[in-house]
Image (tube, rainbow, N blue to C red; front, side, top):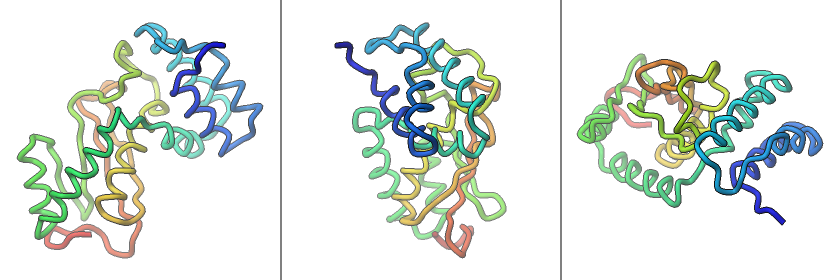
Length: 191
C-alpha cells in the first residue's frame, strides 16, 4: 500500500471539519501527490487543490480549512514560538518587542495599533516551483503557522489578515496580527 503524503492527510482532516468525508476525499485524494513528490508534482497538486477548494467553498471556509494545514517544519514551528515568546517576554513594550525582532531584519512594524509581520521569501516548501498563484487560497497555511506562533506569544486568540503574498506577485508576504481581546496593541504596552 502506498504511503499517504502528510499534506494530503492534513488537507483531508481539515476539509472534514468543514464539510463531510466524501467531499474531503474527493478533493484531497482527487489528484495523487506522491510520498516523495518532485517540484512539478507539488506545483500541479497545489494548483489542483486550490482550484477544487475554490469551486466547493467560500473564502472564509477556505481560510479556515487552510489555517489548519500549516506544517511544523520538523520542529521549526516550536523553535520559532519559543524564540519569539522569549523576546516578547523580555520586552518592556510592543515598540521594544518590535525593535528587538527587527534586529533580526524581519521588517515588523506597528500601525494603527496592530502588529504587521513580513516574510521576504516564500516560506512554503510546497511552492518551490510555483511562480504565481491567482488567489490567497494556498497561502492561508502560512497564516495558520503564524496564528499558532502569535497565539502562543500573546497568550490569546488572534486573527491574521494576509495583506500581501510573494506568490501573488508582491515583494513580500505581509500579515496583520489581530489579537482577539478587548484591547489592541499600543506602542507603549504589550498585549
